[in-house]
Image (tube, rainbow, N blue to C red; front, side):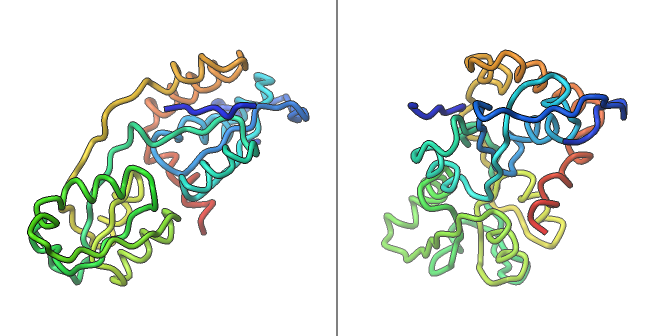
Length: 226
């Protein structure tokens, strides 16, 4: 869900003749490194925001809570919320957990007040009713949360894509796969903004993602976290 506050790279064909600088009135868009925001990252990477004179400034965050805080403080104008993200509850390589019932007395990392914590609580509800102890720790930063899991510092973590896939490649095991309630498509979300040049940039970026695949652009996420 696109939420509003109250108040450069190369083009896809490798050519970009425009070097456009955002104005002081540029639309400030807060993004986090998750699949739902990928078209925005790609639009920036391919120089589409510049070439179309979209007058948009992307402000990158590693956690949804940081994005929400910036929105509340009017430091950004819009954020892409996490209402349509595919989550996975993953266990660490050394924990050897295969069922939800085995999470009793285990440490699970999630965010503080976003979807991932709610999804953990919903899916361990049966254990909570039995008065089993479940330790959900707050780890907002997606990069840190993922590294804690693959380093076996925690037993499990709720992660969105592509962080979940990265953790699986490093030995993490999927305990649950959860698709949150679908929201509006990204292009429809941005059509509500007053910035008429942003939507064409997003749609072109989506075309490029469909052509080359998400994996071709995931380095944009991880590059900012290395």
